Length: 358
Image 1 (cartoon, rainbow, N blue to C red):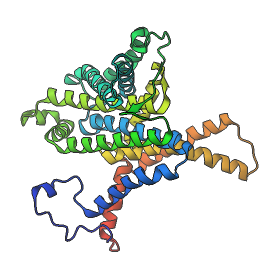
Image 2: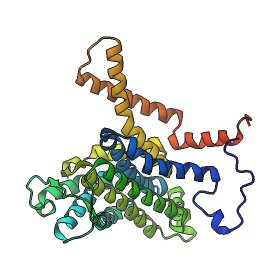
Image 3: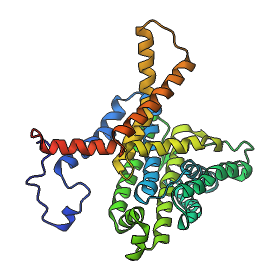
Image 4: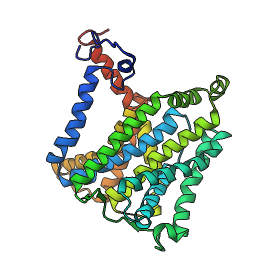
């Protein structure tokens, strides 16, 4: 009975409506945040920070944005990478065209521009839904990279469309080391996660879920369908735009429109499917699964090759990674269709009852 709620009484509405109502949850989350902010920068190597933790945080932010739209509002989108590209290129233009603008304002501006573009491509959701809406959002995935290449102004007149981000400074502090980049991204992800959690619990979040479950019934009880769907597209695209800006400035440093391709959109979609659609925690689980599993498989294959004294070429290793990766995805979806977040919920329920079976 490590996870008991007995004796934890709420004596005010504010305490009853808190994000974390159980003391065990508060302790776990605060300990995890403290460990991530204070301990990880001290013990993690540059490789872990740049190749694992930073991309994990970036994709968590993008998956969180898509989860708001698909998981909570029920609007399927295949244009996530395109909205990330809008955020990246918008933040880049803010940095080079607006003198002395703080980097955080460039990120916010890139997110707002992406939100406006997301609303534009979300207009078809007012008439169509499901697979047809996914095809409509797929248009953004092909149109936006093409536009970024054809209009050279977006890339500061680079014919190839490639942009190289300027040095990142935050109120005089230069953010150029893996540790500083990791901490900066982590703070952004934490703040936007708290914002998303509060949005989901608010009136607009409940409206999203009502539209997702049955839009006709939601309209009958007075929920404005058009406004609710467009707000979902705006908020989701804002998160993806900020993720794209962080992806360009703090992870890669140099990006091109073709880097924000359909493969990246599907990768983020798989993250929320595996992690759990309609779950903030699922965005973290899915991003961790997609980011860490290929690295884990590569090490396992190398270990087995050394143990068995056989030579495996890099091409064969790549194919084996794809096969095992796809098989594991199918296995997880069969075992638990609601994602890893559901397994986490089941574990918490077991801890509530332990050591009793029922």
